[in-house]
Length: 65
Image (cartoon, rainbow, N blue to C red; front, side, top):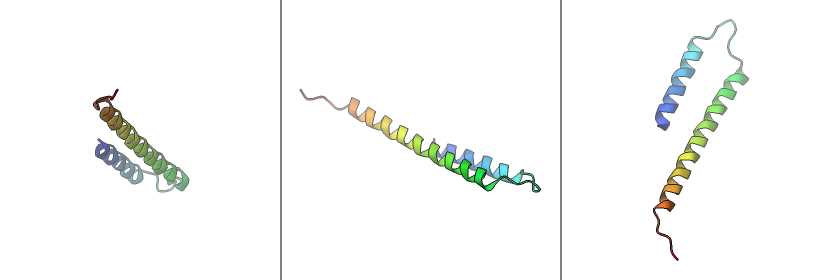
């Protein structure tokens, strides 16, 4: 799933760059902000997956008592 998200983002980014107005290109700061937002989203997705794995592994571990 991560690959699909990254691939989709890259396709959108390339399309955005190809179709921008050459006389009024996107501001560099806005471009960097988009990349930072995507990076944060990837990290949050990874954290979410790891928490899900952790919860799954602790729910199958027998309790001692």
